[in-house]
Image (cartoon, rainbow, N blue to C red):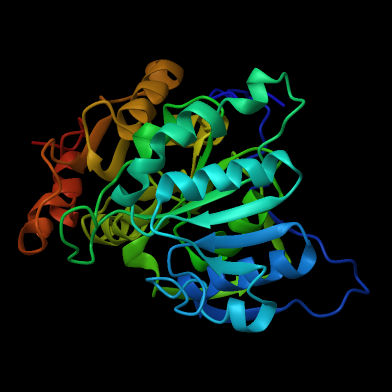
Length: 356
């Protein structure tokens, strides 16, 4: 399979983003309330138990359970041959995963923080993304690279970054960012099952948010999710920006605006059909993302919406993003990250007929 960025089609069923399909005689669904961190931990454990070729490794993921404790207890429960520590060498970690994937295994690696992944970037771009195409599909890369990303935790330099544009720009990589515990579980299971390489971006500040997780629910890679219905304006967000989008929807409702919220969640491949249908239904759109706005995923979303929805738009598509500066230090990050007021200000510019 050759991965492409464009999945534009008018026949995509926007109601089939997530499907639970137990037979009438099936056992009751396994539903529990848990944090995103716990959902990721459960997805890794279930994947390891389901497939002997799945292994998890990275810096401090073994006995410590990872910096964010995503792999907590996996080594003790499943053995150090299935979840183990590596030296502090990101390029070596990813290079080892490439060799494993070439030989039929399904490695899942953790690169502790977003900016820590950059030493492995050459491996990711030159080998992970290209081997399938280089060999005309004879060599597959069924590996997942998990990267905690984004801000909101008061991290110091190199510990908070939004590097999704680097990966989404690279053909051959699937790029996913969940925003709920359910999607964290379902999308990670889908990523591990994929025959092609996946960059799995985990929003750090959402690790401890809680929600229901149904392990029978599946999520299809390459699909967006309608998180809230609305008729006046569509907010497009992903990852850590999703709670903000929902908060804005509540605030806008108090001002008489009905806000639709779309969780993009799959940055590449991108679900043009769902996003296009959503924006066409409201005629107005705002894209929200933590990363700097210039040459960003937000820029790409904005461009795709303009190209596919121009005749339906009542106003230009706006973006609310991080600023085009290096990520702010901890005491200043609240000035850097998008907030409710900035998004509401963007909504107010969308040529409303009731404006004075």
